[in-house]
Length: 140
Image: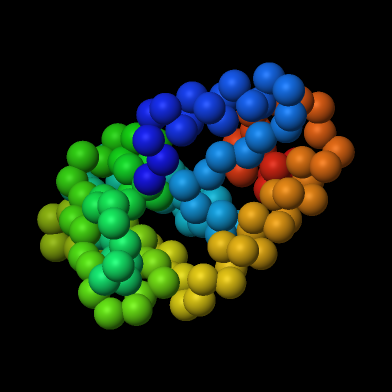
């Protein structure tokens, strides 16, 4: 949940150093997003909703990842749940007449985000200045 001025500062920094910003540093969230895009494009008669769950101390709701999913997929309905010590869950439910399809990305431990951030940092070491998406770095 970066503020607008924080994102602006990252953009400024990217004019002199390579920078990567991501709402979620799990490397596999990218595959989840790609699967969701595929389903969204195929299930045109279905309604879709995003459900995201995080620990009771998470400040932003909906999460940055849920907002990003909403933008990418054009899904307006987001349900946020906060409680316990959940590391993170993002679920997309596609509801059709008489059937339902769900896809879920569940983070069991926060270390996956640290591993993704370290992966990203390693990739940035060999990059020119600029603003890079995590998606670009994972898929190169």
